[in-house]
Length: 202
Image 1 (cartoon, rainbow, N blue to C red):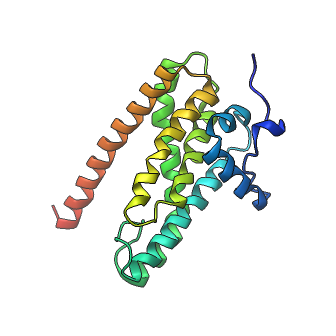
Image 2: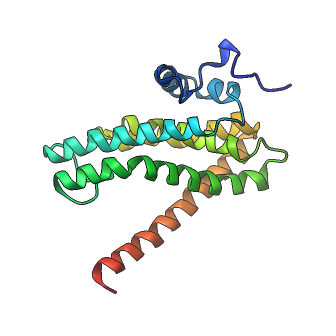
C-alpha cells in the first residue's frame, strides 16, 4: 500500500516556506500526531522548507534562551557566542546557519544507517525531513530545567520519522536512531575537545 500524499487532509499540514501560516499547523501536527504526520507528507521536493522550519525553531531557542540567560533566569546554554549582549546577538545571527548545518549532518549520519538497514528507502530528502521536523523540540528547549527533558521527545520524533518516511520496521528505526545518537556524541566530543584545545592554545 502506498503512502498518502501531503494533499490528503487526514495527513495534516507540512510547513511550506512560502506560506508562513503553515508553521503553526505543522508544529501542531508533528508534535501531536507524529506517526500520521510523517506518513502523510511527501518524501522529496522542496527540501528548503524543512530546513527553514528547523532554522526557525532553533532561532526561537537561541532568542528566548538568550533573553533568559541575560536576565539571569536561564543557564548560558542557548547557542550564545560568549557572554553578554554581543554573544546574544552573535548567537542570533548565526543560529539559522548552525541549524541548517546540524540538520544536514544529523541527516547524513542517520541516512547512512537507514540506507544499510532499510531497502528500499525513500531517499536522503525523506531522512532530512525527519531530522528537520524533530527540531520542533527547540521551541520548548529554553524552558529552565524541564526544557531538555521535553527535548528528549525529539528522539521519538526522529524514530517516528524514520518509520513513517521510509516504512521502516520498529527495530530498523530504533537501530538507526541509536547509530545517530552514538555517532553524534562521538563527533561532539571530538569537536568539543578540539575547540577546548584551541582555546588553551595547544
